[in-house]
Amino acid sequence: MQIYLSRSVCLDVAANLDQLEAEASRADACGAELCVFPESFLHGYKRVADPLEVRRKFTAVSHSHPGTAFVFGSFTEDRRNRMTFWLAGEERATYDKVHLFGPNGEFDLWEPGGHYTAVRFKEWTLGLMNCNDVRFPEQARALRMQARCDVLVVSAWWPWRRNAIWETLLRARAIENGVFTVGCCIAGSRHPDEDFAGAGNHVFDPLGDPVPTEDDHSYVLDRRRFDAVLIDPLRDYRDVRKVELA
Image (cartoon, rainbow, N blue to C red; front, side, top):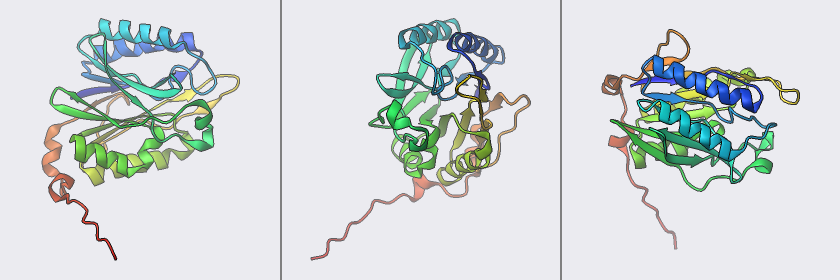
């Protein structure tokens, strides 16, 4: 599967909406089947975007590029940090961030989601995760074991100074679950109240090896890499036997 990861700087909302359209066109031009955007890429923490305007833009962009599926990072709606999956002009799935990051004041901005989300797309099953979620191996394992996900798609607003942590967590989730992990992070933020340098984009195969890229945007997920997995958690899974003591 050919994928494209957006790598944009968060500006004012109007400029970000224009960037969204330009990035979608670039993804289409390189033959991407899936295009992923970062967390809060339209408004960050300090700007406000109208959810109705955002949805109109998502609908128009997705409709204009029917051959590409879009994971539109996340935006604020109904007091949730909401990821959405779109195909051919229609929203097909949503995921509200479950594991909010308290040190950034996220509990003041949003309420946590109540469930995890997986999407079946062509021959792939995608598990949606958002930034701090990647710290929780039980979420990744649930997506793998219960939904049989073979790709974890993680959108993020992660700082460059902790890029090594972000990269390590993505690699760990790939290795322990035998899945591809796709980490798409905001490149930075330019705003009077929010000047921010973002971490990198990273893609790892089911062995934890980096997937090569020629332009830091385009990657190919090759299903043959699953044949090389040494330990398959699906094969070795067992139920828990609980022992009650009198």
